Amino acid sequence: MQRINIIKCHGSGNDFILVDVVGREELSCVDWSRFAMLACDRSRGVGSDGVLLVVRDKDGTYGMDMLNPDGTHAEMCGNGIRCVARYAHERGYIASEDRLRSAGRDYRVARAVNPISEGIATYSVDVAVRLHSEDFTFFSPSESFVDAQIDALDKDLRFTALNLGNPHLVASVEDISIDRLRSLGERVTTLKGLLPNGVNLSMYRPLSPRSIFVATYERGAGITLSCGTAMTASATAAALIGYVERGERIEVRNRGGMVYCTTLLGDELVTRLEGNATFEWRGYVELGDEGVTYSVEEYSGESELWQQFVAKINKE
Image 1 (tube, one colour):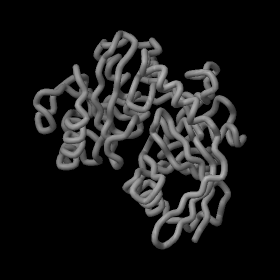
Image 2 (cartoon, rainbow, N blue to C red):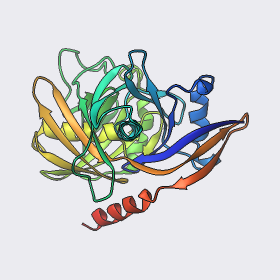
Image 3 (tube, rainbow, N blue to C red):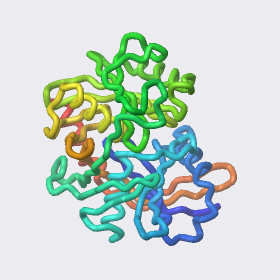
Image 4 (cartoon, one colour):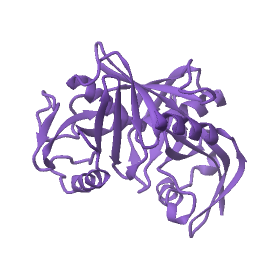
């Protein structure tokens, strides 16, 4: 058995196992893809939506390596990077405003001056949004794909294609059907010619000029309570189409809670994502040949505060 210290954490209900591997040679032999597949499997115990590794590159830059439940690496995770930002800040790795690296791209992160709710640790990340990438082959790299149809995927919906470090397709709908979303997410895997690297697929419903609701089928994970980059992509798409105002701080609600997004258009398209970075408990995992065993050493009490916040916004 190998013992690995962890923090169980979440961003907007999107829960993770966080492991600090900085300077820990004893962890260099761990097969992290296998670890993710075992540790995230809810049928085996606690489970989670992914594993967050806190890492440091050769140039000294701290960052995140995120693994999905199927063992694949995600280029970016908006909910996860907020949790890593909090850990790295409290550990002294980074300042209250600094940068973190994920899949070779640097992201500005910061501890929010005003928390999303009293007592809830809140961090932000600025995400550069690209309107085209090699992840999309169904339109020209010199063009963009905003509020248009993809007949091979769905002849009724209109999608916007965005890259936030990882690829996203988002569609505005009047009503969100989780069953339909799951079906579309599974269909994406059959469209390798159009989406060679897969995609995170979201539906969003405009609630007001300053509020939308988002649900997502995550590549490598399936339906989750929330996805940070998907909420960011949906808010960006809504701003590009004109459902919400660019530059306005809007509420983005989801089944796991709520975040804020602000889409800014300057020299580049950037959307700021602000939300909780909740540490539920600290403990360890014992990794063996047959699986993993969780042990809790200390509950933080932060989960109760978060649940109170979610209950409050659900009544509004």
